[in-house]
Amino acid sequence: MAEHASMRSDDPFEMDEDPLQEAADVEARFYAQGYDDGHAHGRLHGLFEGRQLGKEKAFELWEEVGFYEGSAMFWMKRLGGGGDKSNGSKSKEARALTHAKTLYEMIQGLPTSNPSPESGNPPSAAETDMDASANVDSAVTVADQGGDFDLPSLVSAIRAKYRLLCASLGIRPRLVAGSASIRSRSEGAEEDPPFDSAEMQVEGIEGPMKGVDTSKLRF
Amino acid sequence: MEEDDDWLNDESGQSYRHQGGAADPLVDAEWNRLATRYSDAGYREGITDGKLATLQQGFDQGFNSSVLASRRLGQLRGRANGLLSFLLKTDIPAQNGSSSADPARVDLTISNVREFVRLLGNVKRDDILPLDTERLEHERNEHPDQDHAFEFERNDKRDMEGLEDAMRAVSSGGDIVGPRPETRKENTDSARDASSLDALERQLIQLEAAIIGDHQI
Image 1 (tube, rainbow over the protein chains, first blue to last red):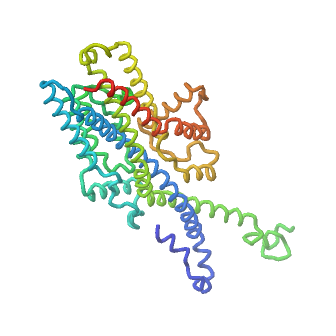
Image 2 (image 1 turned 90 degrees about the horizontal axis):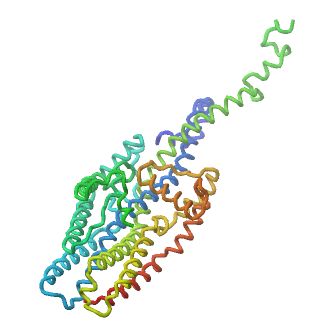
């Protein structure tokens, strides 16, 4: 589309040399004018929609991770105080405390900003010639390749550690199925594909929950 | 007689002077048609490209601005859930021995915590995350007649959220067909105040102090 934009900057002197040139370019001028207006409006919409998607994604990820963190905090506080425990339960609780501490530390290591390598950089001019879906795909690929760390596997490890903590305490873990629906979404979904396997795993462990948002049931 | 005249004859008819000239209404119509057609085509392409140019930037902004509050809500839920699990799994009468083991009181405590967990569960994403004021302004100014200027791809989660919003509106005596966007924004603001995370945290701290203090082991 760069060529359309460039048509606007036609040299006025050239126009003088060829009076018909203006008439010949009239479609291109209209197109370029429309393109510029649309681009300006589209940039705003892209920003707004991107923000909304980012909010959804951040909430989905960090509400879950925050839940694990809160659980770890509670049990660290609760078990870390010591007290008059019987010897039998002491070692069990010490194990649970270790799990809670490890879980808490793992969460502290999780990045709190979006790990997108192209943060703030709009797609290059070459990308703008592609159609919408191709563009999103390429963005996802770039994000997948460029990350310094493997966020999905970190999250999976955190989930596993949380379940371990629950098992050691003998309490029911929170079911995680609410984010399974992100599979159908393509926009801005850098971490989506690896998440799927984790969600499937949880589904397998926790039993059938198709069509039911079990996280909503717990709260 | 006049109709048989040479159309090039200046004197014969008005059509010669108008056809294709500046005063010909067809020329204006054609000009407008061209302008609309090509501007619209350009606009469509431009808006798509413009969107793609800033989508990632917006995503990062939205993500970064939402992590803190989301994490905090998650923490509160995790702590409250831990408290409930602790109460449910702890055999309080046996542990505490005699005096303070009042089953009725324990039941009351459990139901208090359950109620608090339910309260936390009712907090929605939009209640705690910052509003995109630029977007609201843009919607008001540029798309005042559209309920949803921003179309998002439908998925189960968004459908569920829409359903929850509708249910909330119905249960609070709201409009059955769903709140208008303006109403929704007002609701969001009031919910934001009512379910302030600070207030919830204070409540949780009180519960924790009451329960853990009571059953110090």
